Image 1 (cartoon, helix red, strand yellow):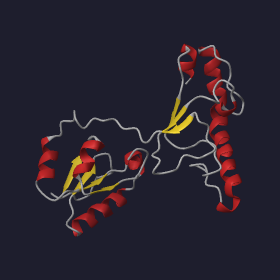
Image 2 (cartoon, rainbow, N blue to C red; image 1 turned 90 degrees about the vertical axis):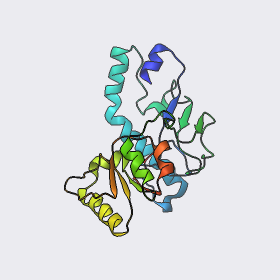
Image 3 (cartoon, one colour; image 1 turned 135 degrees about the vertical axis):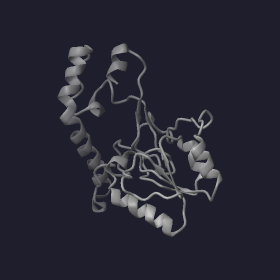
Image 4 (cartoon, rainbow, N blue to C red; image 1 turned 180 degrees about the vertical axis):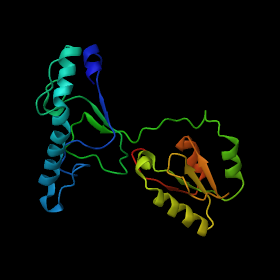
Length: 212
């Protein structure tokens, strides 16, 4: 954002969460109590804005003034800044997840999830092709950005359950797999485009992060 301003290029913002003030739903990060209704929803956004902005305000403004020659952003954040508050925003959430709040400005639009379409250029390894072709469609186990905090016992219980139910598994290599008995019904997979893999599996065990 700062670099675009410094270069005086057209600016728009992309957000992966609908973290924009509204009375129609609470902040993604601070859940308002239903009893507070629309007022609680709106306040939850105001509170999160400050919890996010104030710890980084001084560093951001120092970079803007000393490195880029830009003015400070408003003390309360970009939403209050005259040069930024009306910046067009694309919110990368599907309208099937939430309806576009009626109190958002026209410059704020839901675009749907953002995907890199890499299926056409992907060359799957032979082991993956063989696994998919020789048996029933498997389940896919991958927890996205939560993989590094996933306890080993969770992965172990999923693998054991799959074996007991005669299910096949494709498992992300980034999960904790040490000491887990992985039989022929499991394939460890490193990187693979979701748009190539997901149509070929029978189901997903996933954290359900943005874009999945």
